Amino acid sequence: MMRIAEALEAFRQHRGDALVVPGRGGRYWIEQTSRHDLDAPLGDPAMGGHAGFGLGLALARPERKLVLFDSEGDILMSLGMLATIAEQAPVNFYHFLLDNECYATTGGQPVPNAKKVAYDKLALAAGYPSAHAFEEIGNLTRELPAILGRPGPVFVWLKVYPEVENEPIGRRSRWQTRSREQVLKDLRGGLGLPS
Amino acid sequence: MAQAAAETAVALSPETVLAQMKQNGVTDIVWLPDSETNWLYLLMQAEPSLRLVGVSREGHACSIAAGLFAGGRKPMILIQNTGMMESGDSIRGWLLSLNIPVVMMVGYRGWTRHGITTDTAATYTERFLMAFGLNYYLIESDADAGRITTAFEETERTRRPVVVLVGDEYHGFNR
Image (tube, rainbow over all chains, first blue to last red):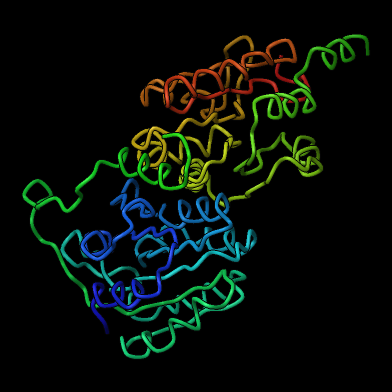
């Protein structure tokens, strides 16, 4: 397994001018990124929707790579989204899955069939042309340039350590530094769009 | 026969809906078919200015529409009332909390002009919209098509989703 922050850091070095939807990795990514205007650290607007947001953004901006860090809890809630992404087949879409096998923000309860779901095979069965799986950061680091150098859509399943939060929501420290509305305004500004 | 012809003449036509989409600059239709939309689907499919993004669950349409808007497109959501109710948390999180200006065109399954229905999909539709504070317009025929443009103008102005309920889709059976 790898740490989420390690996986994001490995990607950061190859980011270029890609749009990034960091999903549940947002708390780490906002410390690592230098292109806040091309990031969408939206937190968790509604569970299961990160892949859809990433797809929409990728379709809207085909001139840039779109890199999404999804989670297994989110995608289990929206497996049908894999078929929609595969049908649209945006060549700029890079779909990373951070799989910690649990609902980390609610205390670490396991997701259904946590240790036996093969997410790379689900993506392939839904119609993704290629999928990869990594458990070790060294292997991911070695293969990332090639993965990002080829056209998407591609699915990359990463086994990550659970980083469980067990504090009641009201007592947790907030990692977001911008409101969702501001994130969207900044992103549109970064793309040269009216806010 | 004469009555059927009269009903057909006043029903909402898919050509009118497509014209409204084009008139209002829609670029992408994020949709899941309802029981009435096949004729519209065929027209949309043949329209080169539109991209169709099919979903398998209506809530997916909300996050996809949000992403499309974030990237500068003008999406429209086309679903049925049953799926809209299924999508409550996605409407809240991906549309309302992000201030996404999008028109949701919603097939009003079970609607009848006289207000008596045995279909609970209709029973709860307007109550659902009111609970979420979503403004909506009902259209029944081509004569109402201007309300679609009104919805587009309102969503741009308010930066909130606005709903167009389609009370009688393309056939005039619900009268």
